[in-house]
Length: 157
Image (cartoon, rainbow, N blue to C red; front, side):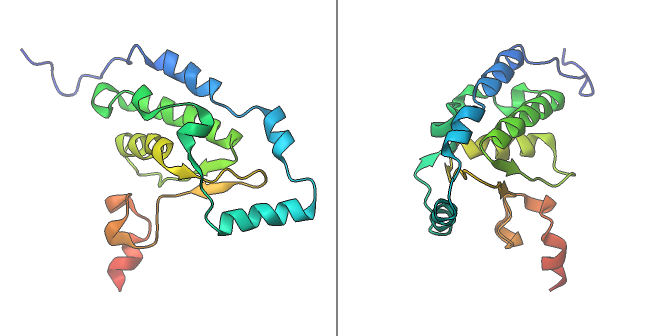
């Protein structure tokens, strides 16, 4: 006998451990302070590295988390995915990175996109914040699919 579809999923038993792992992946403030540009020349060098698209390693390399550490969407409740994304975004802040997603994005897509960042080569700024919104402005190929904020404008053309 199948359970009713409207029954809520229980929290995945691995979530508390995963949240601790995400917390351990925070960049320490001492390391961040050590890497902070100290002169205008160092700030300009950092800007040059960003503009030159110098991405040497994946986010996973920097923070130590691996995509395979995260349970698949099918095993998680919406609440579990929201908790993981919130913890992940807090961790990202410590690396001077920020994830900006549309408010109407389903938790499953937000989770997949957010965790997918671990596999992408990433520029870690030492000053300022790099915002990641997954939108290139070309709505037909956007990772946000029908939730892309550019889609409405794109369809009016």
